[in-house]
Image (cartoon, rainbow, N blue to C red; front, top):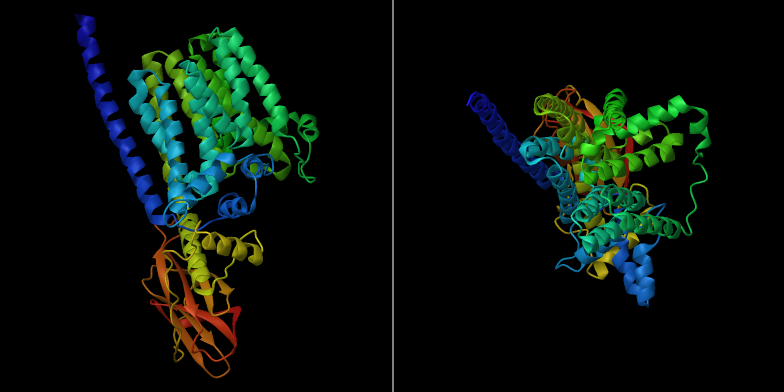
Length: 535
């Protein structure tokens, strides 16, 4: 009776905590969905052009089925990103063509799917806290470079989900499903290959020796075939430099394992904590109480992050800490905590659980504050580029020549795969105006993009403003156009406002004009060293 009465308050506290944790997790996911809906833009970014937009056009030109399949599966660096190309192609068949907001949402759903699989790995009594931890880690703004990038989300979030789903299915002896998810992982990212040896480890730990041998053989064969025709970058250093400096190699490994910490000191602490926990459990024999699925899944992310550390070490520590790799570190922390739930007694794990959730909440808050600038910048820039292309049938593309970007977008439009002008705002008007006097706008950054019939601007002014204007100054006349503005949420450097617009040059006499900016808080014009030539 005493034990029962003593246990009841603890159970009530645990139930209250679990309910609060589930509600908090759902709220965080809902907030993330709202941010995606607000800031994601239906416009390709970086390798979206080659991995998604260009694919339907190439398929139309290829005469045979064999060539079409080869297009989906060919190497791009060390990856065979067939699942990304297939997703883009399927999206292109929808009415109106592919929508990058939908593809971004799909990629983020895969991240949440990976979190769900990780949460299921916890004992049932701890899943409320695990769900909150997963929500904090997997929706954190620290992943923004993949969260708002279709190819990044479909690849890095995708391979994490496919690998976990494969190992989880295999742990439930759903062998065909496990094989299908393993194939998806392999044909999403080069790191997906590592799911095969991890599957061998898991089946061996489960006492299924024959299956373990089959998975090991499959791993060797598929890895060999995967890299046929691969040529690594000539500038990439080999592993010799790491072998010669073991302390540097260890630092890179720990930083990669803990890169969910974003900054180097935090990443090293998180990485060291992960290694220490598993080392203690290995030496003490406590690892035997951890389910084989948790061990194999944690091993997958540890190997993948280790490979990233080794492959990118020559580029410096910042290349190891890139945002797109942090999904693996987040899931490794979740799986390490799941192992702790199986190894530690209830009292000790409760402290570990609360401390981990508190740390994740701090990282979540810091990431939101730090990333808000990049998030608004990306949103504003993407809208400007889309409006520019829609108005001029020609655009500007980071990392690609203008001729390639224009051709790819025009061809996608012609075959109905993607219309880059969809949902674009029409260009604004430029009107003649008289110069104004007074304090100048505190301009922090401005970029000007030339066009044939339009020009576009993007920049940042200090302060919170509802209105901003761009000015053109010629030899004897001045013109002004209105800009769209968006204030940075919770900016850590004080209040700042981003602006952008695409403006038509109709009515402006030919000539070269100096560009300046003003806002509603300052009467004067901040002139830049940038010009616009009107033909």
